[in-house]
Length: 250
Image (tube, rainbow, N blue to C red; front, side, top):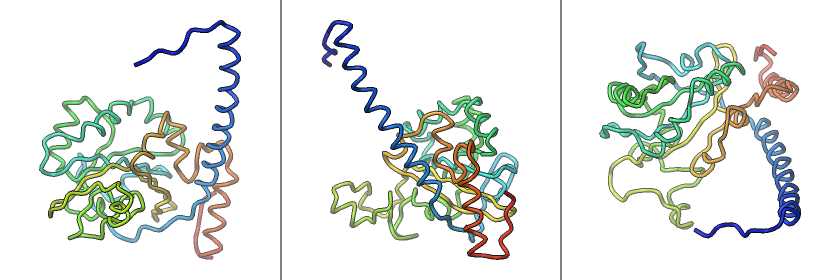
């Protein structure tokens, strides 16, 4: 790998200022994109999903742990595997207690979900020394419905908002040509209003690489960083307009 050229301090400063201008423009674009993401509509979850957790059976509502928002990391862990996906493992290594506490301070819970049975998840989690919540969706449609387990026998194949045919035309096919399910990564965000749960956002593939600290993760949620409550209030008023009986605690 070649190294950067060696220049004088003045030349370096000129180059750095030019790059800074581009960095500022990128930051402003990101802020605009995050605001647009918060204005996305949302979909109510009507299906009852049941997960296995260390404290027994849990619903999707239970995964919120009483908080207003939930972020789920779709961790690739097929039921037949003994270990989780190496790439997902690398990302999970960065999910520190401090990171989780910062999310909790913004009324947001983070949890991983995989199709592997709970016993395998708990064993792998213990070997890695992880403490974050991690649930098994084995036996439910959750992974299939959120398009992180792909199996045409269960539901039409879709990943990153493209059908299998669209991926094949684009040369981005991620699928095997046999009858086994395929595991893929993703991250999904949910909003709780009383006992109702809404899906607000999901991201897949290289979009997962944009994550940084807890603020970057909050940027994917409906309420964002919660430093300005005007946009979340707008979401609530939109819901009221659609459903006059829709009670939201602003």
